[in-house]
Length: 350
Image 1 (cartoon, helix red, strand yellow):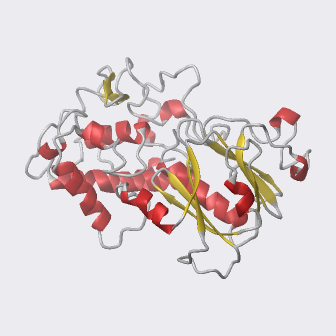
Image 2 (cartoon, rainbow, N blue to C red):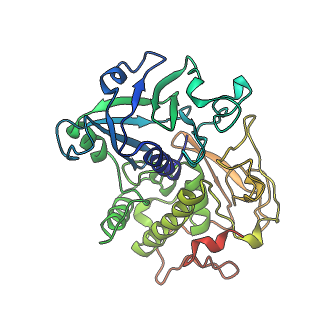
Image 3 (tube, rainbow, N blue to C red):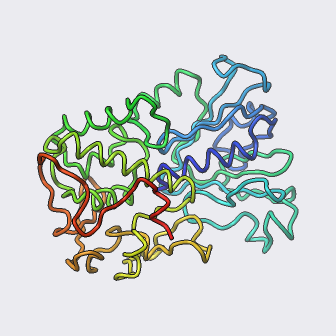
């Protein structure tokens, strides 16, 4: 399932591709009949909140954002959803975002950026929603949710979500919501981080890596953590996800650690990230400390990385490095051998 940074990149790509322009909408699959009613609308904007995407469509570009005429297309990609783009050069930064998928046009042995005119690309039978503009198109396949909401429906979705680390938080309110939600709960911190009502946008990779970097045992109850522990976790999460939104990749390792035990235990489909085909990107076997590294030695201490089921998902951790189980006076995230130095998140990637 795409994590929050991916959905923020998706919103930016759709905004770049169609923002302020009139679009054609259709549902080749036939499972989104509302597309016919939205056809010819103007995309006022695209917004990401956690793992949820909202596309604001209106009859004209000058319609106020709070007008009843604005319809919100709400999309949640879930495990199998993805968007693929094709168009003129510079149309969209990404060719595809979401679950592992072919580049649009590959089945015809041609790409939207060369060889085959994107205007002639026939949608696959699985396309739930096609958005087409003057310079390109985007196809949505396999989403968990694709629906039209009014302002009240959109707000109902937002009310179910916790704070999003990638949304602006000038007054620190989001950070305080996160800290309060964790510290008043008896639930394990490993489960809390996957609860979208506690924090929106975290998936299994960020959960595992954040806890390793914080030296936290995944099974410690949230109420046992100090405010300082939670605040440090939030700041680290903001830095990691900001980097992810900028690059499209989750990279949590420091350069000095990447060649130590540079292995990963992949599933049959593999752990995929956007940009895997880029030779300059940090390869996935060097990107994580514990995620999908069960049975392998910890990069820092050599202890075997473990995995277990926690709230229906697999959690990964190092039993030696992650021994913090309760609040301690003067606690700090820094480990004697590995200060994270996150003042500059970009310093994590060489």
